[in-house]
Image (tube, rainbow, N blue to C red; front, side, top):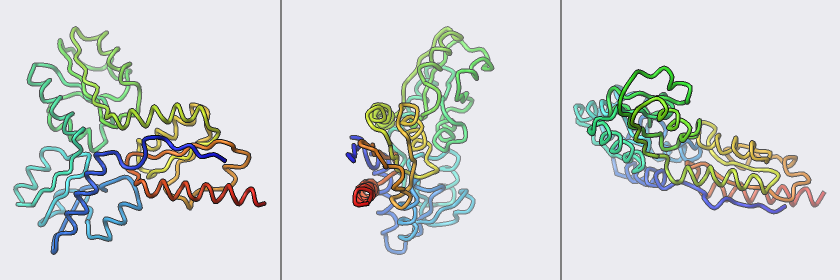
Length: 283
């Protein structure tokens, strides 16, 4: 069996920066470092950071002292204000692509546009973006546009890891309803590349293995894209989940990862895929 790896593998640059900053923060002697939500959607990496001393809290109200570590998704502005009021040290590892969305949304609002944020309203990144432009509307599907109030000028940004309904279709529908629509495609390049590769690679292989945390929306979407483009798709968190039966009679298999998956884990999965193939041949 030949294994074809996607070109874009391992951490995206935003997650890589976040993990590096988290490792540096917990390495400071005597440091008490807390993050609100896991730094990455990857159980192996989460455990590694927890073992190194990184604590996780559900709310800023639980953090009384020490360092608040801000993960790649960023945080709502009021959380920063509470952290400063508590005199917490803040290590901000917000992904530059997420910060770019905040800047673009604020700029559009200052120019008089009513802001529409396309994304999952429950996603921490989107919550952070909405806090920068109070009063913005958040939608996830074209159908929601019908219920939006009137406005003359609408400015649009989108969740950096957006994998839902096509952004272009939403912008088209907004353009039909509003006189002036100015949209900035803030889906990050890494997300677009992985989604494009999932589609093209799936057409050339019989089976696709996608490595990433089960709680990672972007990883789940890659597996779904592979499935809809013709490959039997398996979303796994590690090599121990692989099953020999998946590869019986398979000549070409694809391998790719979500943005929160470390490269060494993808390597381990590839090694195990080869082992299972060798075992099948031996029998």
